[in-house]
Image (cartoon, rainbow, N blue to C red):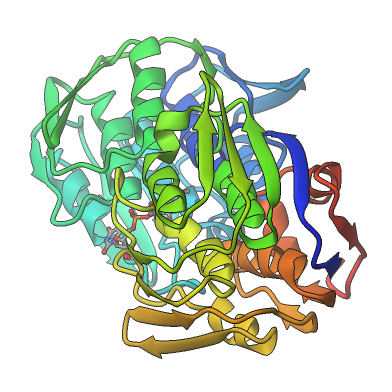
Amino acid sequence: MILIRGGRPLRGEVPISGAKNAALPAIFASLLTSEPVRLENVPRLADVETALQLVQALGKRVRWEAGAVVIEQQAPPTASPPAELVGRMRASFLCLGPILARRGQARVPLPGGCAIGARPVDLHLKGLARLGADLRLRERWVEAKAAGLRGGEVYLDYPSVGATEQLLLAGALAEGETVILNPAREPEVEDLGRLLSAMGAEVSWGEKVVRVRGRAELGGARHRVIPDRIEAGTYLLAAAACGGTVRVRGVVPQHLGALLVKLREAALEVERGRDWVEVVVKDRLQALTVETRPHPGFPTDLQPPLVSALTLARGESVVRETVFENRFGHVPELVRLGAEIRRQGQTLLVQGVERLVGTRVAASDLRAGAALVVAGLAAHGCTQVERAWHLRRGYQGLVEKLRGLGAEIWEEADCRE
Ligand code: UD1
């Protein structure tokens, strides 16, 4: 559990780690080659450990070398990963395309539901079928076969991050060109494209389209994972909630575009340099109207911590979640801290209050947990965040980094640990 004595401003600079959501697909890309893949700037997180355990279970060797992870082993992956590892993390489903492309067959369990909505994988499966895969569903396992994947044109009904990555991974070893219309273009998807290009596939982006020209074999590569824009955004929102001056260092400011515009709209001072962003909070935040959208829209992963900051704004904010149908696990917990939030379908009406008051709350998932930490930092008195292990999936050194900004925060083991 995480304990916070809140109600004081944050001040200082915080270094940002490599992006979890870029590291995970990069780890699965290593399954596409028999040569070593060296990934730098990989964050030490529970989800990264799960992905590394998964590629090891499929036959890879993994070693850490001073902040970089090297993944190697010549033999093609085995056809099926352990169900427990896929069940632990939805992104594990990305091993399907690479296993199928390397072996001509794969058997991977469906990732199943999770705390933030149904999250189906229909777009992954439809796309792989377009590349020539024969797919069957048997008792929640996907059984896939393909004599050889062939490039083709795929249209995504929704620009899903995971489906775009799945098809880029499979397309990189398919014969000819794979064209994905209406792809996701989150910075993490582009980062995967850069890695695949370094491995020998040709990935090129156009207007609402991405093309990958596959190769019969891909080589090894050395790749530096981009900084985590969601981690950076969370610290900026913590400053917005608590007041003070916070600089996030080692970021790509363009990746934070929508957030920075909204923070300015909320009357914060925002400055940016080549690889840093700083927010200065002199006054109470102004209420905002925000809708989550695929990139470059406002990221859904920052919606929960944004709502925390807006609970203290002047006026009523309107926050609409359009990416996931049930990403509101933080809301009842924020209300326990004194927030005034009403939910109408996919929309939250957040009436700003003068102060939050600390109490015991519980994290339902990773970003809901981040929201509770942000709120706890701003709340008067003590906040106890239970089920804080969720935060270890996505925030490297959270407690230490916040202490570096002057927060009074501790971590204590709770029952699960
Ligand atoms: C990724 C991120 C996650 C982020 C999300 C949206 C990783 C590891 N996770 O998740 O942090 O919140 O992008 O930016 O990178 N959908 C379908 N059918 C599909 C696939 C998705 O209907 O086949 C729906 C989902 O249910 C959801 C929406 O599309 O409502 C977005 O999902 P998607 O973009 O695929 O997110 P993930 O890749 O799961």
